[in-house]
Image 1: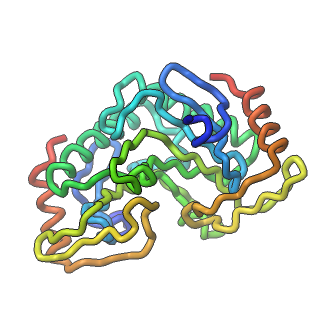
Image 2: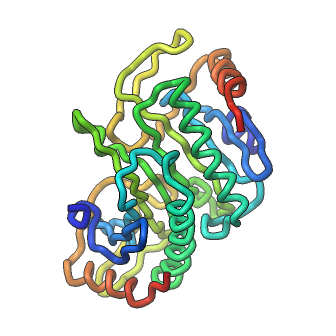
Length: 144
Length: 144
């Protein structure tokens, strides 16, 4: 289920799963989701934090090399689940690489029209073959 | 300078400064700013992460008690500095308590009209006396 919601699975570790987000409004947009049920960041344990910090370093370093963004937006929001009457929030981080210049990648032109401003929630789906190619590119270069 | 940008200082620790944000669109909205210059989360050191994690636990636990939000949005974005030609991004976290129900606090009615959705960037300034009273309430109850 999570796989469908958060995108294409890139890596599963002891506590987290990394996905390429279904919307590639900003090339490389990813979701890092905690595997166990846990509604609030205050309840993460030390081992989960430790692995999260390793992900921050690994993702920023690798995506800098692959996609050359200008910066990263990290957010743990959980708003969507509160649209339900019985919210079941799950810890997951949105990672948005942000780009000052548009460029082509695998034949697709990516433009960050909101550069300098918070990420837009508007969905941008790309060709499924390109989506899979990005997942594979990350997988091949990811050392965790 | 940071004091003016990020709001009213609540607490300064070894590595971070906690502020009550100038905009109180969501009661208790705060900013947690790293004291040293550091452009990317991947470059935080272990001691800075450790103190950050302590802040996450302390802030969520205390604000739950004082303000009773339904959830917290945490975000490290740094977009604004990239509107300049020579961006100087600084690590700072936006903490938005989010509220499913409107209520009065110190005579001011707070409404979270975007509940269930990402925080709005629209600024809501409240009476300076109320702003200071909120800062003092947090200071009096904060054990770090």
